[in-house]
Length: 147
Ligand code: CA2
Image 1 (cartoon, rainbow, N blue to C red):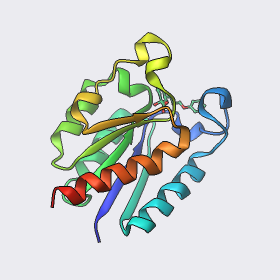
Image 2: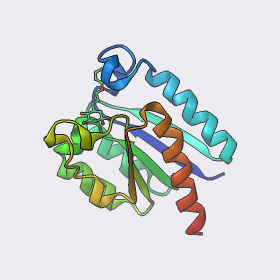
Image 3: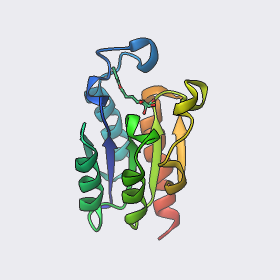
Image 4: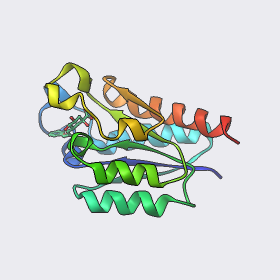
């Protein structure tokens, strides 16, 4: 069975517990359930990960090579700072969709630049937790078109 990775970066473990006015009240565990439901409907396996550490996220992308067929990444604040994580996105041979809960283009100006964007096949942002199943559907569409 084909498989997708959903990778979450720093502080996203706190989802639903702080700053609900920005990030909503849905927890990361609930987001994972939404992703599992979408993957089940699409008949894809799902690996769902979160780390607060840049190098761990890079390792997880590397380890997905040859195992997963695509990835969705919410790189959190590393989106705006990490050339290394963007290089890791470029290093894998499967498509990667960039995802953000908030509309990063309508917030502080430093959030509108993403190092990940140019390495990803596309970006989904501003739809809150709904963006995760949307991103999985977009990714699976890209994967199925490429085979
Ligand atoms: O909107 C998104 O998904 C972000 O990737 C979230 C990042 C932020 O730095 C990006 O600019 C946009 C922050 C994740 C922090 O998540 C928290 C959740 C609850 C409480 C505190 C932080």
